[in-house]
Figure 1 (cartoon, rainbow, N blue to C red):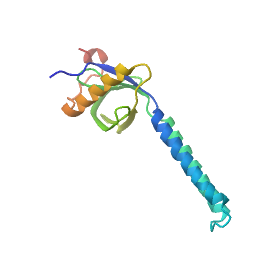
Figure 2: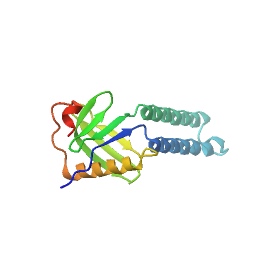
Figure 3: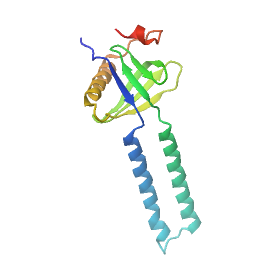
Figure 4: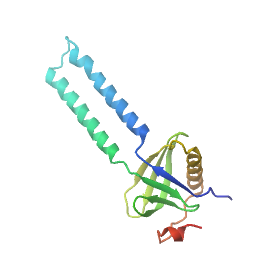
Length: 159
């Protein structure tokens, strides 16, 4: 059985995730306009403005969470996944949750760390990297991951 080749993929904040948040926020704010300008509404003005404030606070909270999204490099060395931020972190479990061909949601389990959720999108100008990443994701999902080595020293992991 052939394994997919090694690949390193930069993971940034998801543009798709930001677009969905902005669209939801816009729709929520637009839904308040009929309430605010309808003359025959049974809602007091303070309730409408309170709703608007709650929608804005929820939007700000969502933007803060998006801004704190994990950024790093997801690396497949042919046998193991690594999550690289400032140093390599071995991944003990990786699961593809959604695969939309142009967007993939994965969950990473690292030893002693909380579950990490990543929205992966192709980086402009590197379609071959995206395809290699997807091949590695599908391979490791269907064939499972071996236990990562004890050392996270990159020299000990590369063939």
